[in-house]
Length: 577
Image 1 (cartoon, helix red, strand yellow):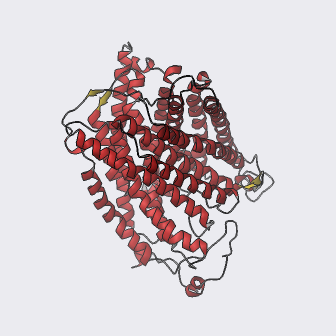
Image 2: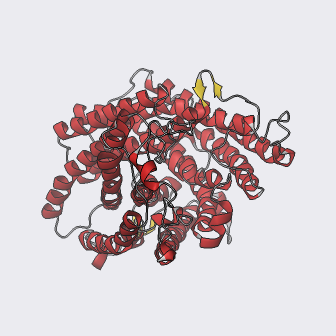
Image 3: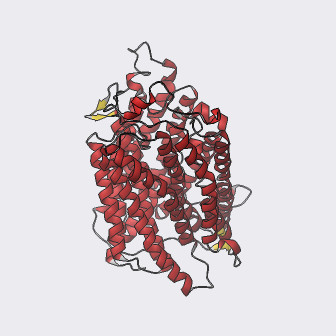
C-alpha cells in the first residue's frame, strides 16, 4: 500500500538511527569477550573504560535499539493493517523526543559520565543528562502509542463485526504492557535519580529504586519479545508456505502477556534483605506463569510450520521440517525468524532456572546470566529486528536488497556463534565465572597469581569463538543494510507485509476480543503484587545512600545519612519484625 512521505521518512529514520548506533553496541560487545578471556588486560581500550563500554553495549542494544524498533514496527503495523495514516505531528514529536533523549544519554556515556551499566543502580551516579535522556526516550514512545489509540478506536467503531487484525492486537497489547511498566521507571528517574544526581537531595533509597527498576526491567523483556511474536503469528506461516494454525491462540497469548508479564520483577531481587519471602514467592509463581503463553506459542507455531511443510509436499512424520524455505533469498525473513525460534527454545528453558528461588542463588551473579539473556534479547529479538529492518528498508525505500546471499546467511552464522558464546558463558558461570567483571585484569591474567583461574580458560575462549562468529555475522548484516540504504531506488516505495491467513479462523473470540478487561485485571494484580514490596522498601531501609562515582569507593561528599547511620544497620531485614 501507499504511505505518506512524512510517515515513511519517520519509520525509516526510526530504523536507521538505532542501526547506526548498534555498530557501537556490537563493537563493545565483542570487546567484552576479549576482556573476559584475558586477551585485553587493561582497564580501558582506545580510551574507553571497561564499564563505559559495558554500559554502551547494554543501553544501545537493549534499550535504544529495541525501543526505536518497537515504535517503528508499531507505526508500520497500525498504518498497514488499519489502513489509516498516523498523525504526522504526533509522529514527529515522538521521534524527536526519542532522538533527543538518545543523544543526551549517548553524550553522558561517551564522555565517561555515565558508566553505571544498563540497570543504572544507585549509589553509582550518572550525569543528570543520562537519566533525562532515558526519560525522554520512554516518553517519546508513549507519544507514539497515544497516537495509535484514536486510530484503533476509530477502526473499531467502523468495523464492529470484524476482529481487530492480529498484528494490531499484538501491537496494542505490547504497548499496554510497556506503558504500565515504564511508569515506575519514569517515577524513579524523574523523582529520585535526577534530583539526587543533580545534588538537589543528599541521599537516595537504594532498595526503593531497585524495586521500581525491576517493576519495569522484566516486563521490558516482553516489550522486546512481542514484536517477534507478532511476526511469528502473522507472517512466519505465510513465509513458510502455509497458514496460522489458530487465530484465537495468538490473541489469547497476547492477552495473557498483559496480565502475567508485569508482576514478576522480584525474581531479580531474591537476595534483597528488605523484601519479604512471601512476596518473592508470589512473583516467582507469576514468572513461571509467563511460560504458559510461550508454550502455547511453541505448539501453535510448530503446527503452522508443519502445515506449511506438508503444503510444500512433505511426507512422513517429520518430513515437513525439511520442506521449509530455510535458504530462499526471496524469503530471507523466514531465516531470521526461524533461527530466532531455535535459539529461544534454550533461552526459555534457561530462564526457568533464573526464576527458581534456589537455583537463582547459584547462577545470578555469574556468567550464566548474560549467557541466558543473549539467548532472548540476542536471539529471537535481535534476529526479528534485523530481518524486519531489512524488509521495511527494502519496501519503504524502493531499493533492492544488496548482497542477498549474505543476507540469508546472517542469521545462521549468528545462531551458531551465539551457541558457542552462551555455552561458554553459562558453563563458565556454573564453574563460578562472575558477570560484569573485567576478568582480563584479574582471573584471566596469568601474572596475577592471587586471582588467576586456569580452569576458566576453555569456557572464556569458547565465548570468544562465539563472539568472533557473531561479530562476523554483524559485519555481514551491516554490509547488507548500508549497501541497500545507499543504493539507488529501483521502484516506488510501498508498505507491505507477508500476511498469513488462519487455518482455524475462529469467529467467536469471546473474552479475547477486547483488551480493556485484561488491562483492568492486570492493574488489579499489579497493585496487589507491588504495593507491599514498595511499602517494605520504604519502611525497612535506612536513611539512604550518598552519591558514588564509578570506580571510587568513597562518597562524593559527606552526608547526613552517614552521620545518622553511625553504627546502626542501614538495612532492616524484613523477617526481623
